[in-house]
Length: 173
Image (cartoon, rainbow, N blue to C red; front, top):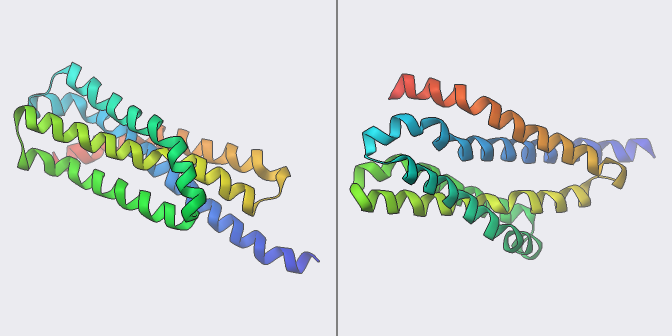
């Protein structure tokens, strides 16, 4: 019996590591503007109030899309949902540094606002869909354990973002 369960155990932990990484990267993406704000403001002509609006745009998209994201995850399946939200997060992440090359002034702020809402929406589904994956792949006795580990990944992402972004800013401007 144990030899049959072992291959599934390896697969479930591989799946978990993917979801852990997804959550980690999500928090790096979420916290990046906060860390880079001091250098962004003078270079892009943004005020502290506008940076606050950009941060809140992410939170708004995130909050609005948690329930629909979970429903989409149930309808499409976790794999497809993670592909879709991963692509959306990638597009939002790439669009952020490209926006200042294409826009300026108010249109730049509006573009950054839209990108932050998109990033928030793309990440709103991560944890509802992850919970469904954990329910499907892990025995009930492990649910709180894997949820706790994934939450630890969020904390690590939030903790490592400032030095990571500061290093990138120092190296690339």
